[in-house]
Image (cartoon, rainbow, N blue to C red; front, side, top):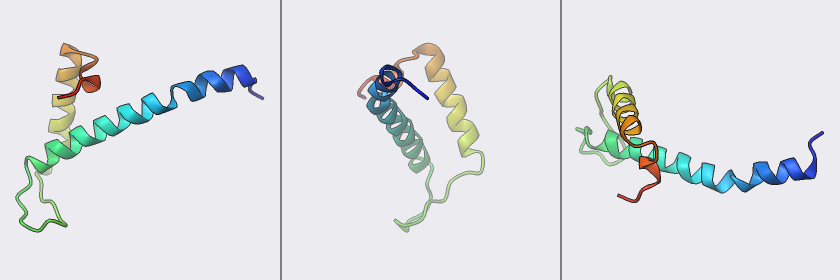
Length: 73
């Protein structure tokens, strides 16, 4: 059983983690749309190695600046 104090600490970072996760998801979506070759707005055709390329790009940016996702671009 968790104490009320521990639950408060855990809940305090919830919005920040959600915001960070949404920024990562948006970055992936933007990367994917830059490769899309579909003219149909409900489908996206991307290279099969897209996730590998995105991960390499993400890790490279993170090595240069661990806080890059928290900056407004």
